Length: 352
Image (cartoon, rainbow, N blue to C red; front, side, top):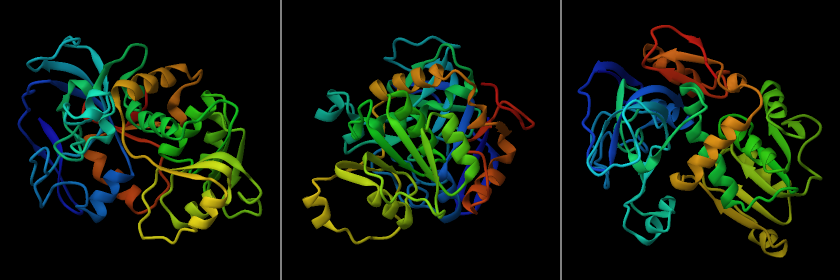
């Protein structure tokens, strides 16, 4: 099969690779559509940080060049030992991640808290290839969505999980700092839950999309209007930037919950006195519980009454993945979600 293989920072090669065999509890998927994200772009430009290119991963055992791709849909091509509930040819969406399966967190359906949590495309070979093996526990059969739309289920699952972590309730004022990538999905999921969403971003085009996704109001960061004066019950910080975190704290109301999704690049000083006196909560979130988050993500994707082409307008061939990663890494203006398909030879409009 053809695959995009990352050897080192800036060294991505389209190469021939062996089609993997599904192990116990796994599915072999013929990959339909893959989303690439900021993590992929960061690993391509500045890695390895997460990818086990130069150190063996303690759970998967992977060491060396790696096939990225952890947001994807595919058709079941083969079924590993012990797997039930799937049939060859079925379209599935994959969360791509799982835990050890035996600890208390895993047994209670919360593998996101497992010390042995890992993901395909991050900690072993992933979906930027014609075929990929994935834990069946991280997959859900999809009906009513195209393969391109189903590839959005993993980032939507991140948003669903973030809302669970923030204990979001309908009617609450929710502030989303960063309307691209995960922020767009958080905006949609919170609006669908009945929240009053305010989206903040540097890009007016992304704010237009946030409005289409259900945001009640939008704020152009750096403009005269900002988050000062807002007192949201829940604030989602998506950007991972110092300015984004400052805006999030400025908009967090008394007794509010700050949900930190973005990775801060440097240590920061925190006024714990303000947190204490205002009885605020800070919550970290980064992972997925596939059994609960993935089905809800698929439901939300299917529930939107317009197509998702505004979020992901194009599907690129595998040969274009390096150009796409480079554009993202260099901060060029790109679609909110960039999709890749190993099944296409030319760029095409997404089919939603």
